[in-house]
Each structure stands twice: as structure tokens, then as C-alpha cells.
Image 1 (tube, rainbow, N blue to C red):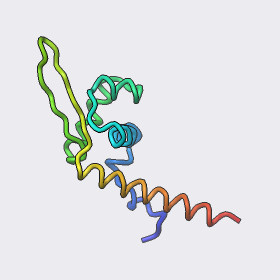
Image 2: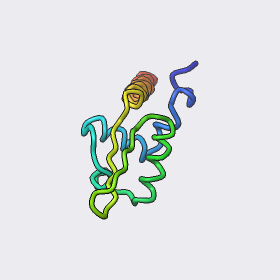
Image 3: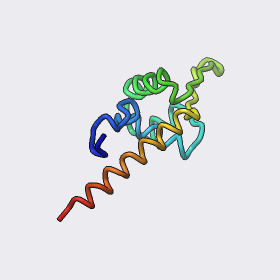
Image 4: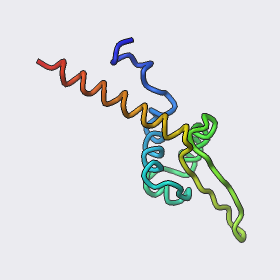
Length: 104
């Protein structure tokens, strides 16, 4: 399969908000929902939906608990998620490298 074939990219990881969330979590480790939302500058509904997709794919772990009267949500990248992110970044790098090499 060609390095440029779209199926080489993981559709779950490649979504803009999901990719940004995974990249942030790769560096931050665990973080709470509010911090992740601030860093990505997305609505809570959008972030919730994107985290659900990542959680369903077992790429992130989401823990919810009640602290006092408030819900508190903590998110972290799973080992499977870190491997998927690393593979995705490597495939993107290969595409970019090939594209640069293809220029006259």
C-alpha cells in the first residue's frame, strides 16, 4: 500500500480534536476535563463527544467522580492510545517526507 493511501491513517486518531487531545495527554499525562477543554479551546459538548469516541476505542481512560457536589472528570492516554498516537505520527511523518521528496 502506498505511503499516501488514506487508509494508512487511523480515522479515530486523525480527527482534529481527538488528535489534539491525544497529543496533549501524551505530554501532560493525566489531566482534568476543564484543563483539557481550556487547552484545546473547544466546547464541553464537543470535547465530551470526542473523548467518548476515544474511550470507546480504548485510546483514553476517563474517570468520573463526585467531589462535594461537583462532577470531576480525569482523562489519561492508555498504553494502547500512546501506541496508536505514535504510529499515527510516524505515518504522517512518512507522508510528509515522501511529499517533500516528490517535489521537483
